[in-house]
Length: 201
Image 1 (cartoon, rainbow, N blue to C red):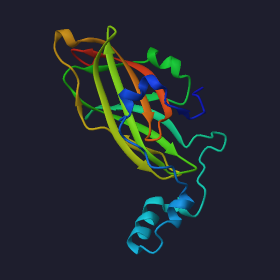
Image 2 (image 1 turned 180 degrees about the vertical axis):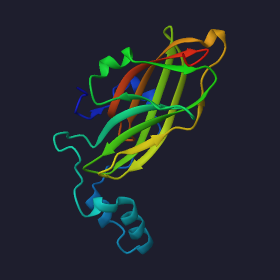
Image 3 (image 1 turned 120 degrees about the vertical axis):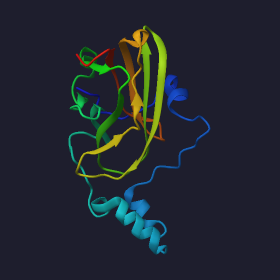
Image 4 (image 1 turned 45 degrees about the horizontal axis):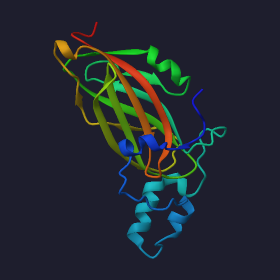
């Protein structure tokens, strides 16, 4: 099973994942956010629209899971093809055995499906480091944003990336992914693999 505890980010990831010069604002509960700036009508309406049902009820989707952010799925999205998906709710050590095949040179996006419950979460980030034969070849870092609790699954879709192409680019790549936030909490980290081929087969 995935670790059900949200962890502080280990030091060896800090320089890769977080801007060391950035100081995150203090965490606030939904009640504290709603209570602030009551005299500002436009700000109050904005917060009501942002928080939706979370301002009047405690939204807990999975009562037995104490985490605020529960990452459900990663998908590789290629136009004209079915999404290739990884279930992130089970045994994460088995993910490396699921090999995605990507045709060289195609445009693809990464989609992360997740649940936010209990409290608003600030400054979500998705960081992905890709290596081949033990050598780092790429790193992407995406600011996902702040999300209120919702009963529905929420998602983030990265901008399009182009898969490597050419004879020397073909082969198997290892990926380390981290879903984290401004407060340096790890919501999930996992390893997976994909193979660049000349065609989809």
